Each structure stands twice: as structure tokens, then as C-alpha cells.
Image (cartoon, rainbow, N blue to C red; front, side, top):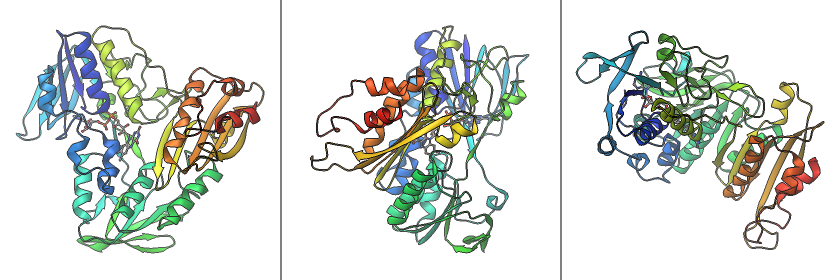
Length: 443
Ligand code: FAD
């Protein structure tokens, strides 16, 4: 059994490890066009911000360590074609420029996503960056030397994390967002405003409803031209979203879903015999809406890869789906969400209602207790939980989102949340935790 994997980060490496463990006789070969494999891209903003002291700290296992575990990792090797009828891939060695054809019995496409670069960002000007992998991070780091003014374009979670990181490095930061508020797709409006206020309290100049038109500068960027005037900047980071890398899957004859990502079944099969897809390039089943979604996140990628690895090695595993759980920190605030916002539920035609509760994360009398805001959303007729959004001034307090996420997986109700026997002691929560208070008001 020869298992070939394209892409060696979260999905690809989880698949490789799992396949080796399931079938120790299988030959597992991983091709990645990059220099590093098996690293945590999620940590990149924290290296830039200085909370993690080196990019190398993000690497879980080096190619040598992986080879020691029986996984043949070939970095600097780009898969440029797939011939599904012959069950072969074409691989270009970036160093030598030579191409070879490699056979497979099972093939996993785990090629991830690429940052979207609008036309105005496709520029030879220095100081203009995206952040996807370690070389991107190193290039941004090098650009920061001597820089004083940064402009982050895009107010999604990566843009927000970067705005904070650049403030931590002492730069003045302007954050530009086309939508009326930051964190648009993740939160309802009231909570978006709280996030924006936190950014502003920490010196980020947030400008929403602004469209970027182009960049200025000679050799190196000097500003961002917008429909509301020029923003001067010597570093620009473009974080306006990602697109799944689907060219190989398409070439192999795999179907793309409505989201533009690769359509797969619960076994991560693409429908092309022997060809699987997993990770940020693939769609997933949303367990609340029962629709196929593209929500590229780390745990999802690892889990999809694990499922693909078992199945490619002859086992029988299924991906359970997602509920759209996400969490991030912006300065002093923790922000988390799961399921649907009120606006998303309404867009889907669901009759939804939301309650907002503000309380303290620990018992009010306990030292260090800070405010936490919960918005809980449910279906009016059935009481089924649809989603939750949390903002807390102790950022770890919003990990409570996992309680709601777990219930969403099993289509739980507000009553079931209210009935849950949650842990209580004053340094952790109030006796009636803020989630229970919200559930009580919702059901
Ligand atoms: P990727 O990590 O994109 O890996 C794909 C690999 O495939 C790449 O190494 C690429 O070089 C390789 N490849 C592509 N095409 C080819 C080819 N033709 N031939 C050979 N190799 C190829 N997620 C969270 O859940 N929480 C977070 O806090 C979080 N923060 C993030 C912060 C940043 C700055 C970024 C960039 C991402 C963050 N993510 C976060 C997302 C998370 O990192 C991804 O979901 C995860 O890395 C996806 O893994 P993947 O294996 O599917 O794809």
C-alpha cells in the first residue's frame, strides 16, 4: 500500500501519522512545496507580537523526526499534476527543477488555502505582506525593522491578531475594514462594536466602511490609497480572506462544492477512486444547518486528516462535522463564538431569538472577577440552541463556548443547557454561571 499525501501541515501530517499507526506496513510519502512541515500557523501572530520568541518554536516535528517515524517527507517538492486514471502524481523538485512521476494506491490532497491578494496587493513594492506560513512570517518580521507605521487591511480574526501584534511591537497601526464593523462574519453587531472599542482603547486606529483602491510608494510601500483618503504606512499586511487551493483536486476530476472548496463525503473521499481531500481545502458538514460549509480552522484540519489517514490505510472512520466554533484574543478581550449568530440564523430563514447576559466570570466577590458577556441564540419554536457568542475581559473565560459547542453537536436545547451540572467554585464562576443564566432566559 503506497499512500501519497500532498501538503504536510495540519491535515496532511495528521493523516500521515494516523495511516502509519493504522497500517505500519504502508509506505507513506508526503510532498510539500514549502520548507517546513508539521507546524502551527496559528502561532504566527504571536511570534510577530513577541509572545513566542522564535518561528522554530511553532514546528512540532522536523522532516528528520518524521522520517524517523517512518514517514517519507519530501519538502521543496511541488505536486504539479494528478493522473487519476493511471494513479500517479507529477512532482517537481524545486531545487533541481526536475519532475518525476510517482505512483499511489491512495492519494490525499491536503493543500490548504492561499491568502486572497486583491489586484492592488499584487505589487512588487516592498513592505507588503500576507501571513500564511513561516516564510511569510519571517518576511514580515524582516520588514518591521525601522518601520513605524503599519496598516492592516481586513478585520477578520487574523487581521485583528496582527493589529495587536504590531501594536505590541510599538508600531502605530491603522486597521482598514470594508464592512461596517470588524469581525463581521463571526459576531452580531453589538459584539462587533465591543471588539472595535477594545482595539481603539489600545491605540489601533480602526476605520470601517473603507475600500482600498491602491498602494503608493517607490520600491517600498509608503501608503494605502482608499476611498476615504491616503493612509501612510511603511508596512502593509493584507488579511482579506483565503481561497481554497483546489487546482490539483479539480485536475484529478474531483467535484467542488458551492463554497468553492473540495466536496467530500464523511470519509473524506472525493468521489475519484482512491483520492481523498482534507483540511482547509475541503468542505465540511455543518451540524446545525446541515449544509456544506468551508470554515478553515486548525482542529477541523487535523481531525479531517486523521479520518482520511485511517480510511486510506484500510480503516473506517467518519468526520463528524463542525458547528463553526472559533475563538481569538484581542488585547484584553477573549472572543468566542459557536453555531450561528442571530443574523446568520435569520439569513437562513430560521425563526431565532437571542438573549444577552452580562455578568462576572468568577464569583463577583472573588478578586480578579471581570465582566463577561454572553449572547445565546435559539430556535423559537423548538428551543433548540443555535449558537453562542462570548466576550470576556479575562480572555480564558470565553472557553465556556465549548459547553455550547458540545450541545450543538447533539442538537441540544436551551433547557438542556440550563439543566447541565456545570462546575462551580468562586475562583471559576458564579454559582449560576453566566451560561446558565442565559439558558434560563432563552428557554
Ligand atoms: P495548510 O496549513 O495550509 O497546509 C497546506 C500545505 O500544503 C502547505 O504547506 C503548502 O505548502 C502545501 N501545498 C499546497 N499545494 C501544494 C502542492 N501542489 N504541492 C505540494 N505542497 C503543496 N486556526 C484555528 O483553528 N485557530 C487559530 O487561532 C488559527 N490562527 C491562525 C492564524 C494564522 C496567521 C493563520 C495563517 C492560520 C490560522 N488558523 C487558525 C488556521 C489553521 O492554521 C489552518 O486551519 C491549518 O493550518 C490548515 O491546515 P491544512 O493542513 O489544511 O493546510
